[in-house]
Length: 96
Image 1: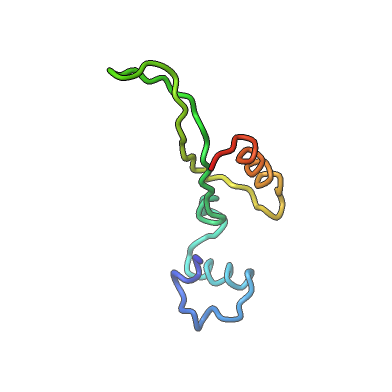
Image 2: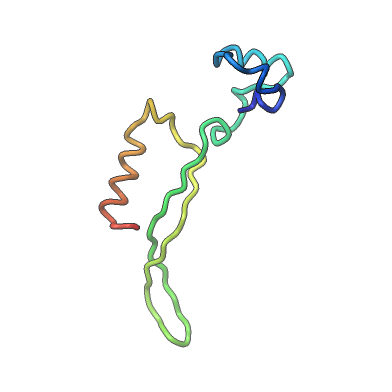
Protein backbone atom coordinates (compact mmCIF):
# COMPACT_ATOMS: atom_id res chain seq x y z
CA UNK A 1 0.00 0.00 0.00
CA UNK A 2 2.81 2.41 0.80
CA UNK A 3 4.21 2.00 -2.70
CA UNK A 4 0.90 3.29 -4.10
CA UNK A 5 1.56 6.58 -2.36
CA UNK A 6 4.54 7.19 -4.62
CA UNK A 7 3.88 5.17 -7.78
CA UNK A 8 1.01 4.62 -10.19
CA UNK A 9 -0.77 1.30 -10.58
CA UNK A 10 0.91 0.93 -13.97
CA UNK A 11 4.35 1.17 -12.33
CA UNK A 12 3.48 -1.44 -9.70
CA UNK A 13 1.86 -4.15 -11.83
CA UNK A 14 3.77 -7.43 -11.65
CA UNK A 15 6.18 -6.28 -8.93
CA UNK A 16 7.07 -8.67 -6.13
CA UNK A 17 7.17 -7.64 -2.48
CA UNK A 18 10.95 -7.17 -2.48
CA UNK A 19 10.75 -4.98 -5.58
CA UNK A 20 8.07 -2.85 -3.91
CA UNK A 21 10.32 -2.43 -0.85
CA UNK A 22 13.17 -1.31 -3.12
CA UNK A 23 10.91 1.25 -4.80
CA UNK A 24 9.84 2.59 -1.41
CA UNK A 25 13.48 2.90 -0.31
CA UNK A 26 14.30 4.68 -3.56
CA UNK A 27 11.99 7.58 -2.61
CA UNK A 28 13.43 7.73 0.91
CA UNK A 29 10.71 5.98 2.90
CA UNK A 30 11.18 2.82 4.95
CA UNK A 31 8.53 0.12 5.32
CA UNK A 32 10.30 -1.42 8.32
CA UNK A 33 10.00 1.78 10.37
CA UNK A 34 6.21 2.00 10.02
CA UNK A 35 4.09 1.15 13.08
CA UNK A 36 2.66 -2.38 13.15
CA UNK A 37 -0.93 -1.19 12.68
CA UNK A 38 -0.02 0.45 9.37
CA UNK A 39 1.66 -2.70 8.07
CA UNK A 40 -0.77 -5.36 9.33
CA UNK A 41 -3.92 -3.49 10.26
CA UNK A 42 -5.89 -3.52 13.50
CA UNK A 43 -8.43 -5.74 15.15
CA UNK A 44 -11.49 -4.43 16.90
CA UNK A 45 -12.57 -6.71 19.73
CA UNK A 46 -15.90 -6.50 21.53
CA UNK A 47 -15.59 -7.27 25.25
CA UNK A 48 -17.91 -7.11 28.23
CA UNK A 49 -17.05 -5.09 31.31
CA UNK A 50 -18.78 -4.71 34.66
CA UNK A 51 -19.31 -1.11 35.67
CA UNK A 52 -20.80 0.42 38.80
CA UNK A 53 -23.65 2.84 38.02
CA UNK A 54 -25.37 5.15 40.43
CA UNK A 55 -28.19 7.44 39.39
CA UNK A 56 -31.72 8.36 40.49
CA UNK A 57 -33.15 5.15 38.98
CA UNK A 58 -30.55 2.50 39.69
CA UNK A 59 -27.60 1.73 41.92
CA UNK A 60 -25.34 -1.24 41.27
CA UNK A 61 -23.19 -3.13 38.82
CA UNK A 62 -24.18 -3.37 35.18
CA UNK A 63 -22.61 -5.21 32.26
CA UNK A 64 -21.61 -3.05 29.33
CA UNK A 65 -20.06 -3.84 25.97
CA UNK A 66 -16.80 -2.12 25.13
CA UNK A 67 -14.85 -2.09 21.88
CA UNK A 68 -11.09 -2.50 22.22
CA UNK A 69 -8.68 -1.60 19.40
CA UNK A 70 -5.61 -3.82 19.18
CA UNK A 71 -2.88 -1.98 17.26
CA UNK A 72 -0.22 -4.65 17.74
CA UNK A 73 -1.68 -7.69 16.07
CA UNK A 74 0.62 -10.58 15.15
CA UNK A 75 1.10 -12.00 11.68
CA UNK A 76 -1.84 -14.36 11.46
CA UNK A 77 0.14 -16.88 9.43
CA UNK A 78 2.67 -17.14 12.28
CA UNK A 79 0.40 -16.82 15.33
CA UNK A 80 -2.88 -18.55 14.59
CA UNK A 81 -3.59 -18.81 18.33
CA UNK A 82 -4.36 -15.08 18.44
CA UNK A 83 -7.42 -15.51 16.23
CA UNK A 84 -8.49 -18.77 17.86
CA UNK A 85 -8.28 -17.29 21.37
CA UNK A 86 -10.41 -14.29 20.39
CA UNK A 87 -12.99 -16.54 18.73
CA UNK A 88 -13.18 -18.79 21.78
CA UNK A 89 -13.78 -15.75 24.01
CA UNK A 90 -16.73 -14.80 21.83
CA UNK A 91 -18.16 -18.33 21.95
CA UNK A 92 -17.68 -18.66 25.73
CA UNK A 93 -19.11 -15.26 26.62
CA UNK A 94 -21.93 -15.37 24.13
CA UNK A 95 -21.04 -11.90 22.86
CA UNK A 96 -23.11 -11.04 19.83
